[in-house]
Picture 1 (cartoon, helix red, strand yellow):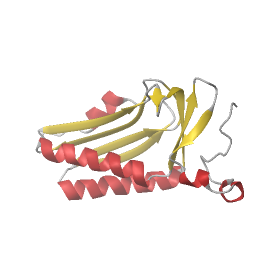
Picture 2: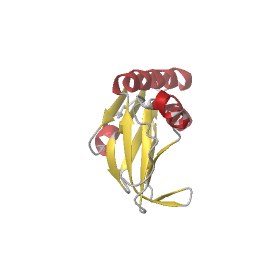
Picture 3: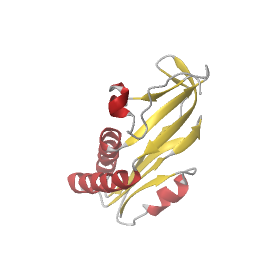
Length: 160
């Protein structure tokens, strides 16, 4: 079983974990990415995620298949939030079950690294100061005329 999903609501971590149960697997590993209260010295109030859903879904499934093949992991799942998230909420969850722990750990690491690198999901930080800004969005650095139609990219970083 390999399943990727985007969710605008709180992730059901227990349900995701349960979906990976397999009596042939003795190893389970997961990664949870939580909304933290600071980034690069700035106090963060909340996060906002936008995604190009159709492409993210296809590429997310592709990443899970790749990790399953590479590490011999039969069961993988990944869920990523969209919309506004409060401090402490789970923004992304990756889980793997495998016959042995090493494969599960390695597959989890591969999935989260590839998700962060390849998926069209953009993160905006909202700061305590009232400012906000998109994080690691290279297209946001382009001139406004070129990036104005890019989802998740904004050149306005002041108060909303």
